[in-house]
Image 1 (cartoon, helix red, strand yellow):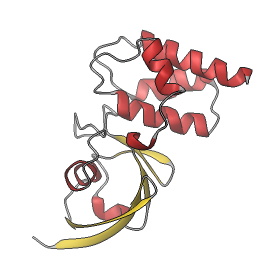
Image 2 (tube, rainbow, N blue to C red; image 1 turned 30 degrees about the vertical axis):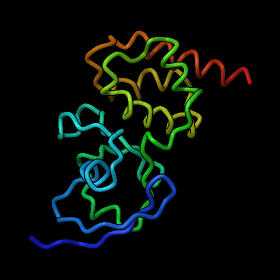
Image 3 (cartoon, rainbow, N blue to C red; image 1 turned 120 degrees about the vertical axis):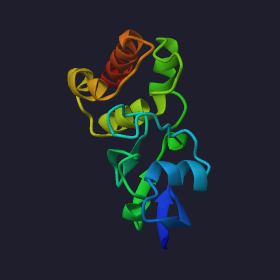
Length: 153
């Protein structure tokens, strides 16, 4: 099978790799670059666990081919600062097994950067992610705590 040389910026660092045409972005990040914070679950784009930011927008990395990110910027959960949203998730017990957390955090980071209102985050961003452990109660509380704290600053 033929391979393709790609170069992409991952978390602000230029990275190159030889990839097969069928290699997913998720597999590139995990296997080639060792960024295992991006989780793979359904491999069909439904669960959101593999969400990363591609040129600033949330995408399901299991559905994006590695060859499509040649020349693009990718941000993974490893690039998010500890504190803020992550602290709120810990304090409100918004994570249990943690499998959905990285993808959810990436979507929430995008929502925060876009300054989406809390009600939009709760009604549109959260439902796009499947969490089998928490029942979303702690996650919703973390979003409300974090967004309310932002608005008071």
